[in-house]
Length: 74
Image (cartoon, rainbow, N blue to C red; front, side):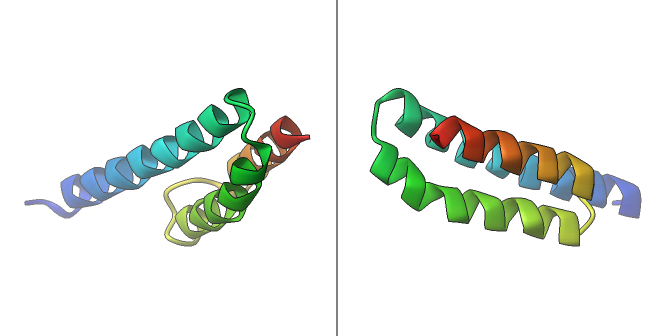
């Protein structure tokens, strides 16, 4: 397997995991479980920061997502 294909698959996996975390977080907010959502938020932020560290997402994209997720809680 070529390197770029392997990286592509890894990046897709990371992005898929991030979408799942974000979906769970937003579902908790919609369900009115603000305390549960508040517990999920640090984990989502951490995962987003790790995605930046390995180069899957850019810092500005992650900062925007983190801001919008935090605003959704308040």
